[in-house]
Image 1 (cartoon, rainbow, N blue to C red):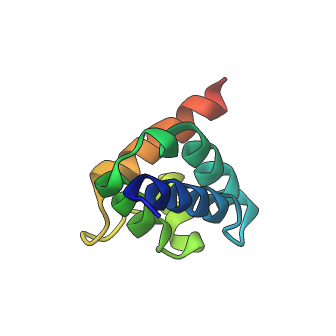
Image 2 (cartoon, rainbow, N blue to C red):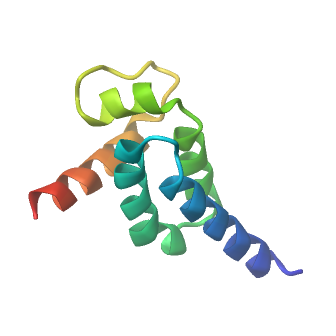
Length: 92
C-alpha cells in the first residue's frame, strides 16, 4: 500500500464519519463540508478535521450555531472554516 492509498482510505473514512455522527444536525454540517473539502485536504488539514470531529455533537452543534463559545482547546480557526461553509450552504 502506498502513501497515496493510505490518504485515500483516510479521506473515505473521514467522509463516512462526517455523515454518520449520531445526530442528524451534525451530519448535515460535517457531511457536506467533508464532501466538498476532504479530497483537497492534506494530512495536517485532515488532522485538524479529525480533532474537531472528536468533539461531542451537542457541544459542537452549539458552537456551530453560535450558541456557545468553544473552549480554548478547540481549533477555532478551523471551526470558523466549518461554520462559514455551513452558513454559505444554508443561505443558498
